Amino acid sequence: MPNQPDVLEKLVSLCKRRGFIFQSSEIYGGTGSVWDYGPLGVELKKNLKDRWWHAMVRARDDIEGLDAAILMHPRVWEASGHVATFTDPLVDCKNCKKRFRGDDPKIKGTPGTPDAQCPACGMKGTLSEPRLFNLMFKTFMGPVEDSASVVYLRPETAQGIYVNFLNVQQSTRQKVPFGIAQIGKAFRNEITPGNFIFRTREFEQMEMQFFVEPGTEVEWFDYWKQERLKWHQSLGLDEKRLQWHQHTKEELAHYASAAFDITFDFGGTLGFQEIEGVHNRGDYDLRRHQEYSGKKLEYFDQPNNKRFVPFVVETSVGADRTTLAVLVNAYREEAVEGEDEGRTVLALHPSLAPVKAGVFPLVKKDGMPEFANTLATELRQHFPVFYDESGAIGRRYRRQDEVGTPFCITVDGDTMQDGTVTIRDRDTLQQERVAAERVGPYIRERIAV
Ligand code: GAP
Image 1 (tube, helix red, strand yellow):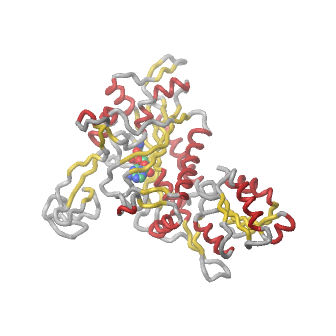
Image 2 (cartoon, protein in one colour):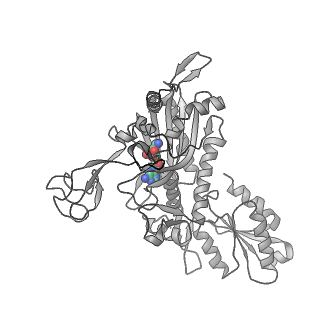
Image 3 (spheres, protein in one colour):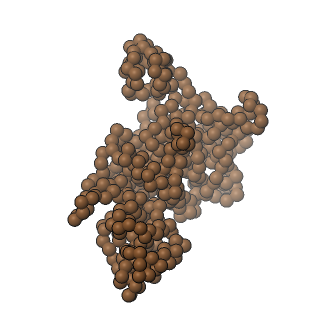
């Protein structure tokens, strides 16, 4: 059966039940739009981040990695434009006290006028005029809580890269064009977070800033658009569910002169939504940091004996949002031939699957548990393996299908005679007999990035 139109609700329940994702501080009633990754979720997200790091940093010689701090000098956010312009219009209803973004399409009429209608309680004339609300979280550095000690939780990781541009360039002796990449947390006090891990107040970004000579940015922009689309396809995301969206002038962020989003079709009410932005940021950021810090951020092109402030092409993708895309894309409910009960499957790319193999003795006797346990322990040195000896074999397979385990290995009567085991493929349900010592290389080949 193809994907259902709206699987989000089913995924929220599966993710909690099987230990992928839990509501933050659940025993206290939960924290608004913050989520915790459980044992399987942390593996899934880590595998996704590893694939990005591999593609963007390790497999290339023109991109360097960085891990900049979350807390930065407050002037950074003045220079970046976030203090002045990283705002959303906020509207509240005097009757039901609910809050909305001023541009929420569910609001009928103009907020602040008598004809405007609250989308939650339906009252007319109760919506306030929109006021600008800055999305950055503020805190204080040091023991004194005054305006001089205000610092922000970063709303994007990019600024940590710009302020380290010369440190990285000079220490690695990279020549323009080259990039700097990092993965890290970002925080936004979103007015309307929601849809599970789609829009949250704390999330992870995987960002890369590519520094190029002015005049070559359009060419690099096109190059990075293609590279990033290919990366999403390599995760197994259905090509029909991926689309470009070009930002209109009104949509462009304050730093961008051109922007394209890679959007994914989440189905149901969400439909196509941004998972990654590719931005032409020109020299906006480096110039602003030069101006605010008083330090030159120029590149010296030695062969041509010229200095310039590089232009930047940015690729910025959300680790959590892409994890959700991967889950939605992978979720299936299928009928199984010859069986009354269907199965739920997460058809995850094997490299992303949190557990790579389930190892089962067919029955709990005749030396099978001992054999299977030894095999599981050996395999666990190379990749995550789940050992299970309880219940009917069919049920054990189903439990692994539901969390996306690509291979199930069964130790049976023949194993005890000839040392072979069966390997069941999650997607085709085909079983192959393989010598026990070949299982490790067999799986390693199939889960390679
Ligand atoms: N440095 C550029 C930048 O931050 P953005 O389009 O605001 O650009 C990039 O964000 C990506 O970060 C988005 O495509 C999305 O995947 C992720 N993202 C942004 N806000 C988010 C939120 N509140 N919750 C989850 N992911 C978010």
